[in-house]
Amino acid sequence: MTILSFLAILGVGIGAGFINVIAGGGSLLTLPILIFFGLPSAVANGTNRIALMAQNIVAIASYRKDGYFDGKFSLLLAIPALIGSIVGAQIAVNIPDDLFNRILSIVMIVVLVIMIWKPHKNLSAATASGQNSRMKNIGLVLIFFFIGIYGGFIQAGVGFVIIAALTLVTGMSLVKINSIKVFVVAVYTLSALVVFVVNDQIHWGYGITLAIGTSLGAFLGSKFAVKHGDKWIQRFLIVAVIAMAIRLFFFT
Image (tube, rainbow, N blue to C red):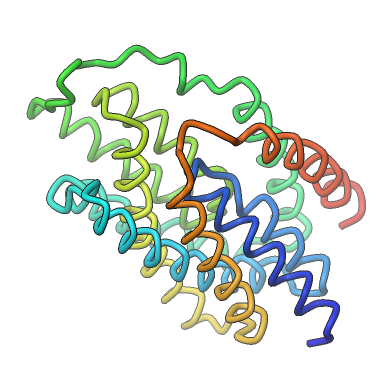
């Protein structure tokens, strides 16, 4: 690892951790930079999971300290997501590099559109009180199984999917939704990480460097006001994501 790669990965990690905890989409930065520094796509995907685990553990601790953590409900959603992530990770370790890069580039653009459009902010709350009936919980279990498959496979932008699902079905506040999101992602990321480790698809040097950055970013992000100050992040992401998507799609 060169000094340049260390500083670049650390810096991107800080930004990605901050972005992921506030909303989502940080992997749109971390995955491409790992690929650009020479990692095969599957290795970059696996290495990214180390950082995701670190940042979400930090965020969980912070949200819990601030009184926004609902452990029972979070676990209800985390279990099906964990099962789904094993399926998704198995797909990820076997997919060819060029196909993965093109899929990632398309996902990046789709998520970018979602970030700009923000459909989850326009969703009507299903219940004003945030209480969930048995049928709603069953529906959420199924939804989070498929979210787990996607998260295990590629991860990028999964935060927006989780926010949209919980906003539509539960009507919870964005702060509480984010506290659930980081727990669910931490749980299913652990199972996906095991799959990548078993298949020797991890670069530990890059992974630990990225984890240090994302942990710091997650701490800063969890302390940041969830509903304010994200415009500059969006502008940066628009430019960076478009450039990286073009690079991945046409120059794999």
